[in-house]
Length: 334
Ligand code: ADP
Image 1 (cartoon, protein in one colour):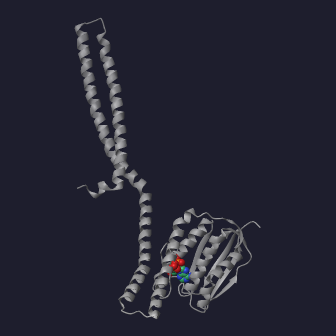
Image 2: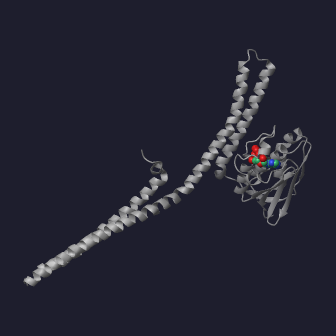
């Protein structure tokens, strides 16, 4: 049974690094030893060619040979010690390097796996609802046309949720690859388009949207900007009480055009504020409210699209009082 550590990617990478260090160290030792051996042999061979073969000469040769052997043993012992030390230091360095190499990969994998598990969780809720409704309907011996319609209507609602979720997931996964067409556009025209997209929802809750965005030219991708504003307006409507008012404002600030969606709705708690742009994050206060649908992807998509346009999205909110989401986009040269 191999312990878990040795099966881990870090251990395998560390072993590869260590193998390279050990091979280099051994090769260096072998080359060094061979060079030294060559030099010793040369020193020993030279006197044998001498014509003067006196007994002193023999003794001297013996002495040289003895010293060469001693040196050889000493060098071998030192090379062993050196390689041992290189092995120990190499193991520590390899472990450190392997950890550093794999850390960003592990972090990415962790994000990926959290994303997959959140997505599966969000998929399961509507699927469970569809299954339960259909099973209950099938168990009834007789189903009136009215009941059948109710089941179909509920299934359709869940299918719409699933479709929104899959669209959102697709948008987030394509995010970085989205090719934007950034050009000079009038932000008030885009705001108008976004308002048209949510007008029915607003009317259903008797919410008035007051649009006072001035004629400002910004550098932006029109489709994405309309999408961002639609997400913000859609949220403002969702999280506001019926018969309330939403303000859509705009202004020039330095070299950016600022556009804000201000509502007087339920607001966001300070603990939730730093997280609302994360994928799948939904404040408990909005999750627990009946009739507020959502999957926690809207603001993540909005942030992604704003940043792709070199813009910025910010939020100010007071719980129970309302929220102010604003986006900044670079002004176009007029
Ligand atoms: P969701 O589909 O849940 O609306 P979002 O990503 O659009 O997902 O928003 C994330 C969370 O931020 C929401 O669940 C809600 O808790 C909070 N939120 C967003 N906009 C508002 C708003 N205008 N007023 C209050 N809370 C909001």
